[in-house]
Every structure is written in structure tokens, then in C-alpha cells.
Amino acid sequence: MGQKLAEAGYPNMSSAVRPMAITRNERFVYFQVSFFHGFVEYDFRKDRVIRVAELPNEVPELPREAYLLDSAHHGIAIGRGNRRLCVAGTMSDYAAIVDRKTFADVLIHGGQKPYWSTNSADGRYCFVSWRGDDKISAISYRSKTEVAQIPVGDHPQRMRIGNVTRAWLDARQ
Image 1 (spheres, rainbow, N blue to C red):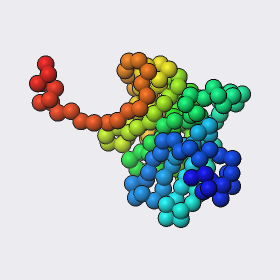
Image 2 (image 1 turned 30 degrees about the vertical axis):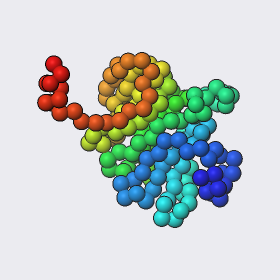
Image 3 (image 1 turned 90 degrees about the horizontal axis):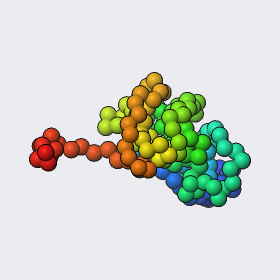
Image 4 (image 1 turned 120 degrees about the vertical axis):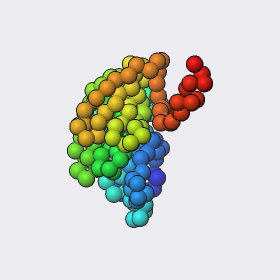
């Protein structure tokens, strides 16, 4: 990816791809790279970087060696309508809902050290883990607001959505 970023005019950007989100039609991928406060839009059909979104860096004086696992941002998801992205701004302590067309963003300061973004089963909400506060937030893609916080225990990071049947639960009671 380093070569593709250089061809797009970003020769000094890290080539270490962090989390990514792919559109439903698998044409575009949005990905984060080490030490960058934002994300990259890549078009698979054109095989090139299309745009780069810079999101607010709320810790501009922070030395690189202070970044958690080299992550300025670490977590990105795309809502069910493919219209908005949900980005975890790890080092700046925010989550952002970002419009795919304009890259306009709304920041949600729901805790400390967000480290992952994933969607609810229906794709209407983005779940963000706040590893510094031992909780997750549910953020509405539609309203661009935090609608719930849930304490989850020590140091949450990555999340996956799954289903558990009532029969399985009942068998364990």
C-alpha cells in the first residue's frame, strides 16, 4: 500500500494498514494507517487511492513513541446504508461519524482511548470500545449521537457481533 499512497501524493504516510471497512458492493475500502489521524479511501476498480480524510488531531504535540501500538486511530466501520463511517480516534479520545461523500464529521467524546468500531447486527448502530474507561458506546449512525454506554469489564478492545440462541442460554442456567 505504500506505493499506492506515494502515487497518490502521500510518500511519507505509513504503509501499515490498520482496521478497514469495505462497502457492500466491494468497490471501496476505507482503511487507517499507523500514526495518521484519519483514513484513506481506496477504489478497487481503479486500483488507486481516491481521497484521504484528515480528522482532528486533538494531541498534536504527542511524540510518535507515545502512540498506543502506533495507532493514531484504530477502528473503522461502515453503516448499513453505506453512507456513513464510524471511526475510533484512539489517541484523540473521540469517535467520529463521517459522511462518505463529504467526509464531514461529527465527534463523540464518549470516553478515553477508543480502540475498535463495529456494527450492530442491523447496521444502525456503531459500537465503540473505550479501553480507558472499560465500556462500550452505542452510537446511532442516523442521529450521529451516543445512545447508550455499557460497562464491560477491564480493557475492552476488539469486538465481534454474534448470536446466541435462547436454548443455549437456558441450558446454562
